[in-house]
Every structure is written in C-alpha cells, then in structure tokens.
Length: 429
Image (cartoon, rainbow, N blue to C red):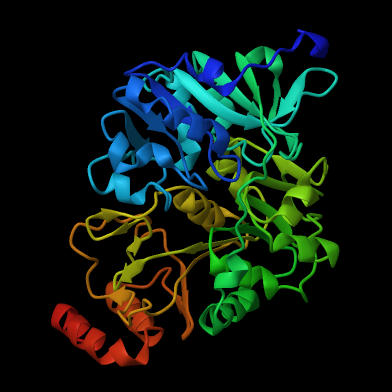
C-alpha cells in the first residue's frame, strides 16, 4: 500500500469491529490511545464482557468505571493508578508476569488478542508509522492480534529502533491531534529522596550502565550524577532526568557492550520536552521488552547499576514492590529482570531504594511482610538496600547479619522494635 492509498475512518467506524467477549489490547505508557479509549466507552451499552489487556496506562480510563462493569473487565499485566481501584474491587484482575515475558505470552497463542488499539505517528513516505514512546510489548501485540486499530497522531514522536510498523500491519487508521500524557516525577522529590539519591550516586561508578525504575527516587538519582563521566543507559523506561545528563556529556554510552553510543529503552514517560528530545533522535533506540529486559542482554553491559523501588522489605531481605497486603498496587514489571542482570554484570550493582517510613510514619523495613503481600524480588537476589539512613549490603550475609544491616538503615523510631523482633527470631544479632 502506498501512502496515497491510505484511508482513514472515524473512531466509531473503526471501533465497530469490537464485539462482546473480545480480548482487546490497549497500548500503554505515554502512548495510551486516550481518544479511542473515550470513544470505546461510548459503546458500553452495546458490549458485554470485553476483556481489556494492558500494561501501565496514563490519563483517564473511563472503561473501568463502576457503571461499565458489565461491559468491560480489565485484566491488567501491570496495574497503574487509573485501574487500581477496579482491579481490587472485582471489576478487574492482575496477571503476574515479568515484563520481559509478555511478548512471548502473546506469541505463544495461549493468550490470543482479538483487537489491538495502538497509538502511532503518521506514516512516512514509505508507509511506516512509529510506535513512538511505547514499543515495549506493543509491537508483539500488533503482530499477534487478529485486528489492529491505530490512532494516528502528529504529536507522537517518531523514534528509532523496533517501533517502525508498516501501515499494512494496521487494519484501520483514525486521525487524532492531541497531546500525550505528561508526567514529572521530579515534582515529588523531597529532602528524603534527595538524601537517598546522594547515597546511590556515591555508589555509581564512572562508565556504569544505568537502569532506572519509575518514580521520584530514580529521577533524584539522575539529578545527583552531574559530576560523573562516561555513563551509559540500558533501561526499560526513560524519564526526564536523562536529558540534562546527555546535554552535559555525562551520558555518553561509550563503555556499553550492547549498542555503544546509544540509549536503549522500551518506553518513555515524561514531559513534552522529553518527547521532543526523543523525536527522530538516533541516540534513542526503542526496543521490545523481551530484548531490553533480557537478563543475558543486560548482564553483557559493564557495571550495570539497576535502581528500583519497593513498598516494604522484611528483615531477611524479601522485597515487596507490587502489593500492599492483599491489595494489588502495581506489577512485577521488570524489577527482577534488571536486579538479576545487574548482579551478573561485571562490576554490577543491583539496588533497592525506599524511604524508611511511609507518609504516615509506618516502617517500610518490617519483621515480616504484610499478610497477603507478594514477594517481588527474592531475598537471594537482593544485594544493596538504600534508605535515607544509609546503605545495607546483604549479598553473602546470613539471616542475622541481614537483619542487623537492615535495622541500621531503618528509621530510628522503629529500630528498637525491629531489634526486639529480630531477637525473638534469632536469639541474638
């Protein structure tokens, strides 16, 4: 199909292919196709038991509202804030899975997709659209789905890498011109996150390859690396904090084994400045999560420093990052992929970073994880744990040594209680 033969339809015409009982994939991150999501909600009265599948989505998600419970059911592969209440109240559910394995799940045929709704840049003169800020699991969803509806938006950045999709792979196109969702995690940075970031920055070596998770702490760490040299980036997610480091020549990617000279990532979430920065920028290499999160690929880079967050951690080192007791908060995502990859990388450092207490003063370092909580990263995988009170190194430590190290970085108000609980368990520290 040549570009002059490409035809567009209205959202109503495009979405009529979705029927009751279908499984529908919705692209996520900053590429969440919000216009088509809103239009699909308008069909709620006509539909029953449509299963919605996605990773993190941004913006409003009207499809999971209580009034549409008979029409749509969210079966989330990573629970985001806009679907959390639905997942935990029976209008949805969660599939525990590594981000790196979702493309394989789609390919296997055991999780068939009837319709994929995606968000792309306009086609170029050769007929290729770009998945822009979200290649991650989306490319495989497109290739696996029986039918693909594409929201075509001139405000979607055109990125390099695995995200180029020919219009022949898209069954119907809908023209949209609206801004992408924007997020700025730096607005959430407090003095506590700044202190944690300084501890981590001291651990980052020149020439290291960085992976940053989502949130205020990773962005605070990036802001603390301005005096470093020769850093590289291989990460599932890219945020605003990388731009100043590229501009200052701190991030050069010169020491990476995989894709030297380029930043490798699966999806991008930030502000408009970041989306403009990645637009047609050969520095940015967008890749599928089954590649960018592959432990074999990760470990081949030097000094991989993986920085991920947690909700709580017990005195043996078990990390809970996606549940709060019985409530599903987020998802397994890529934490284990990068924690393991960093541990196996020459000179690598897998880091779990968390404030010592919640906003209500509850200790995040606990004798036991909450009842019903799920372990995201096992105690055997944990090396470094960082709070605003310091760094605990757990690798090679026995249970008593781990407990002692973790208590030393707990909030002072909780250390006595933690010591008492550890003494009951081990007899001494």
